[in-house]
Every structure is written in C-alpha cells, then in structure tokens.
Image 1 (cartoon, rainbow, N blue to C red):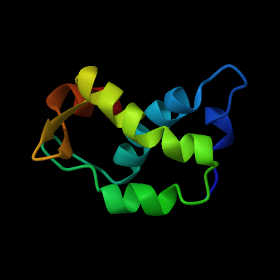
Image 2: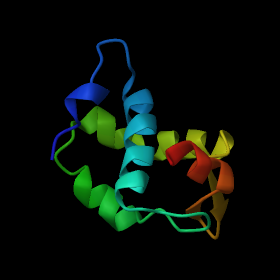
Image 3: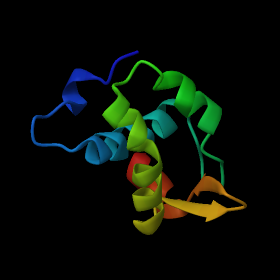
Length: 88
C-alpha cells in the first residue's frame, strides 16, 4: 500500500505526510475516544512506504500527541476526544 496520492506533496516533509496518514488510518479503523492506535497495523500498512516516511512515524506520533490528537499512556497512543472530533 502506497501513500495515497492526495497525501503526496513536494512541500510536505515525511513527518507531515505521516501526521496526515496516521489520523486517516485511525478514521479508516473507526477508532473512538480512548482506543489505542494499533501500532502493528500501522507498521504493516506502512511497510511499503519509503524509508524516510517510515522513519517519520515515531516523530509524527509524538507530534500528534503534542497536538492533543492522541495521548500517551503506557507507551501507547490513545485517541483523545479532540482527536475523535477532528476525525469525524
């Protein structure tokens, strides 16, 4: 699975691309408030992405946590109410 065309931009950094992709995956998986981001699914879905995009996954998740979209508990990212409101 490649990064969707609408998410590719010559001006977007790999981190920005992943900051767009991760919430789109959460929406596709119908995550709700308090649901954990399924890291195994995320890594499985991004295995064919380029190395820069894969390297950007962790920084992107950390930025999404800083932005309040996810919260970290026990080294796992959980969708927040704000994140859910943004997705749906």
